[in-house]
Image 1: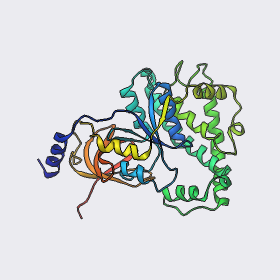
Image 2: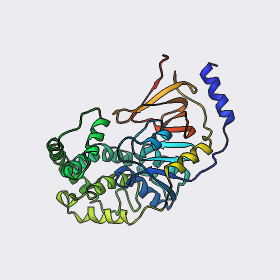
Image 3: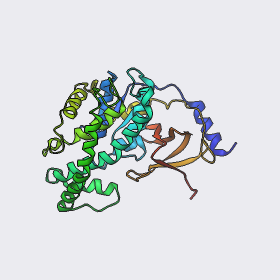
Image 4: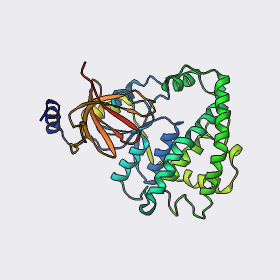
Length: 326
């Protein structure tokens, strides 16, 4: 057994059960992806704590927990942080399986819809919204989103032009939405909502959140509007506020959950690694690999303010690489 594996197993032996098991969502109200998870909490009738984080960097309290991951939202349970809404949804489903987000007979189709909705369709919606509302958003927002992708802050003229280009891509995709909702069922895949509904809804929800409201410019189809009203009526569950300082204290006073140690090939538990989104929209997170499989990758890391925490990422869409020695 190598030195890193020995250190890892020593840490596992010191783990206790988490002190706190309440759901803590780190988010901000105008975040589309956070709206997806807020609605999932409503669908499952969950109580959750709300920690409002900044919409732009720096986010010092948030990144103390995540190790540098900046995207919104993440879910905290004790000293475990779940990043990316795909993984958050899976974790909520595992802990609260009824009602289900994943119809068993249509899971593949559901995942295809989710993937399209949260990539091509979402970015068409987001760029359209930002372009149409360029003057209504602070300069810090434009600069932050450009920096997130390694670019200089764009001019308002360029932002508006990018929004107009995105609107041309959004228009034909909106016809797909109308077709999907023309199958005679109240939700995309049947009589009950699935993750596909929440993944598609939050994109359209964002079209209505800034002063230039845009939904009616792209669809007036009653099937779409009625479907959105049904989903909005689900609500957000039971939300109560929590301060960032309190969330940090909960992490510090808890211990990460014990997980089975396994990893393929050279990515063995105990190895120092870094994890980052494939599209490089967040800083790499460094830590000690706890486990990795086809579904997720989990790191342990220590922070002076948060203590020993465990950060979870989905495997799909994230790069994992060993840290090279200095």
